[in-house]
Length: 368
Image (cartoon, rainbow, N blue to C red; front, side):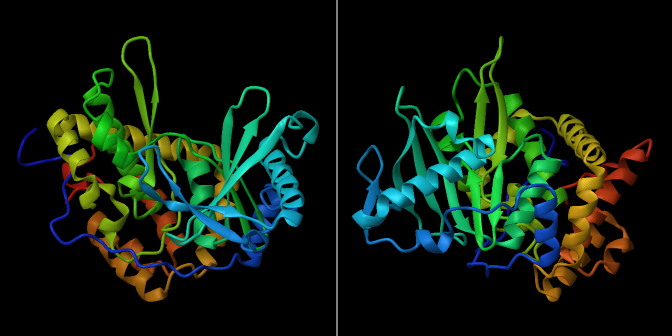
């Protein structure tokens, strides 16, 4: 790796602090979008109903250490009805509500986490025939988080199942190895190709920056490892969408600048040449635009709502748009008055860049 151009850099300042983001209600326009695409559904259980628990027990991991979760105990006279409602929610999420094929499932446990913006409940569902476990989450509905989920569904290589019902959000579990656990235990695993890991880091960095998904430090994304006939394939998936298009700092949308990700950045720099990083970045840019074209009508409807939705204070929008205008050397950003408009302008910029015959190295997205 040359010293003049690096695919990633660590933050040269202090760690970026993310105070609790205020919950933003879902607007009528966004609700109409969710109804149109069958995301908004009547649900038998609400988030507020889940908050009416009786007792909590700290949940520990396999080594006996406390986690950020507590196991929730409900009153005995309410538990059966509540768990049956949760089972119906799971059926809606997985099989469009067909209870006939999930009768053998039961709700085994409900956990609660007061850490983070969404303060989620995690529901563990077990197959009575083979003890196979699955999870889903009940959270407070938040507009920026819903935009993040939908942009992930449309612009990333990953599909997402989620449902909303008024102030309640239901999310499927995203399986994988948490980034901090990957750094500690898996990064030197002999079955993994270092180049493939570094390639995915570059691509993930690009996806977050283009769609303005922030706060992707190690514990907010997972590694999905798929065995292949030679070496394992790797994909990084975001699993926390609370900080979609809210922060005013450009670096907040680039995972490479979080100190928690520094070992991954060093790993990437060690195994990728600058021109190879540029190749992988261009590949992801092209794929993002292809996905955007395939979902043109749906994405257009989403961005139309996001553009008029005040999901971030105007001063944050103005600060970020100035940084993006300088970064891309495009004054078009200075006309943007919302986070949705900035995401839309990012996609326009990508289309224009890809249309050029030669991409100047100075335009390498995510590098300064």
